Image 1 (cartoon, rainbow, N blue to C red):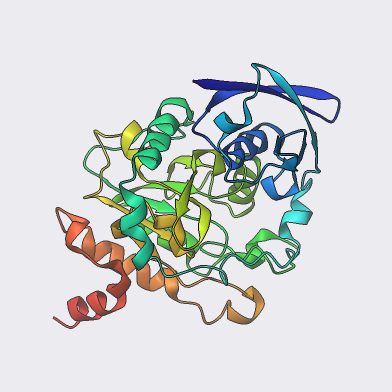
Image 2: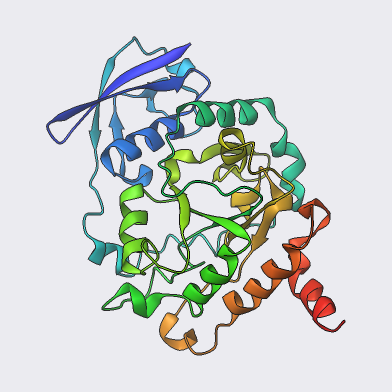
Length: 318
């Protein structure tokens, strides 16, 4: 059954009808975020109650027994300007709260409700292609915050916070890989950051498309409760003729983003304190060599990206 609600916020009404009874309050908040730009943690939804208490994020919408087109008032504010995005964040530090995903994976990867969520994203999420996929290329999926860019430090411009070797890295990767940017923020921010970093219209490489938080799904893990992840199945479902688990690699500084596809994820060291580390950080430089090495392989599924540095130094000493 699909659930349809109308969110009233800031004098406007937003109608949402893409959710099902199996989706959670968090999925609803994600949909609201893609329409309004208000982050889930900033949203207060009035009138969503279970037994007289506000509904928790993991509650399924079906259990709220909402009538079609129920109106829900929302309170919450948007992070408005790029200055605020470039300013230091409050203490919500995901990198510190990340966990080692080994023990959680088996539980999550093949659960039917998670695969069903992916299937819905494949169906409903609209990818805006910037450049067509290229026959025979592998796929590199890149996170933004702390992977390409230190989003916490203060700076006059995004350039100062850019990870060293970024453009050289993307230029080199583009020879063998189609490049997709996937950030857990809204498309407006991703666009702004990519322009600010000079990635969007770089003459030396092209971005195939970008994905935002609305392409993510929430999964329930036994130990950590509900977490948001980036399921590569969304891309494989939409572009199965080009990309699959054998030719895709994804960089992210937060390991739990790989929960649905652990074998394809490489956990990159977070790039923080740009002003101190700008001279020292060589991660992208070394990773571009790793990407070159593995691009020779027909199939990535035998690799353990956790040991990428070891793999690289073995190959380089031969």
